[in-house]
Amino acid sequence: MKLRKFLSVLIVALSVLNAEAIEPNKAAQRVNEAARVVDEIMAAPDKGIPSELLSNAHCVAIIPSMKQGGFVFGARYGKGVMTCRASQGVGWTGPSTVRLEGGSFGLQIGGSATDIVLLVMNERGAEKLMRSKFTLGADASVVAGPVGRTVQAETDALMHAQILAYSRSRGIFAGLVVSGATLRPDDQDNRSLYGREVVHDAILQGRVAVPSSGEILGATLNKYSTRES
Image (cartoon, rainbow, N blue to C red):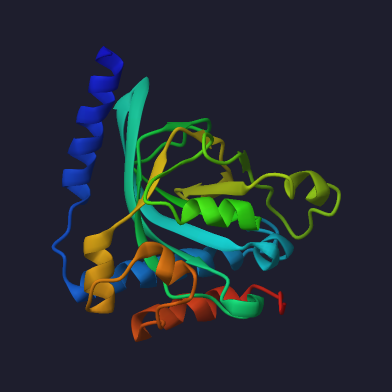
């Protein structure tokens, strides 16, 4: 119970440190930051996310600069965006802003901020991500994603995982073991980004038009994805 309270206090403190005014340019900036993270990770094919995995992903969630805190027992808090395959698997939906909170991370990386990338590898995982609250490791299986040019020897096994997780901190990029963290939509930021009330699952199902501020992320993912259907 004391540990739970301790983690709750840490999450609140980190959320305050990470808090931003809800302005259109702030929400759009987060989308651009997500695109930048993908660009930088994929720029090094020998160390980045294998393009064949990105090409087969149903959805992608990117949390730029997730905040970390605590000693021995820690907490995490970050804001990011999520997008899914558009109709018929061509292109991507508009971004839905999300929050990643708490949880236990198996790979402890030094530094105060870490980029997180989650690849949702099947339709069942994508459906679960459209809930108002989603717990990694509990609502869907999560494994550390491989890096490099090819993962042919591992692809069959990896495809059984619903989510592949990656992290990058201080230039170090690797698969990430994560469980217990919750991912939930940020309705205020979505309202700011789209200029009106929008629903998280409607965005990810492609029922909301992609805003101009979301086009760069879709273009960036298309650049590194070869999937056409």
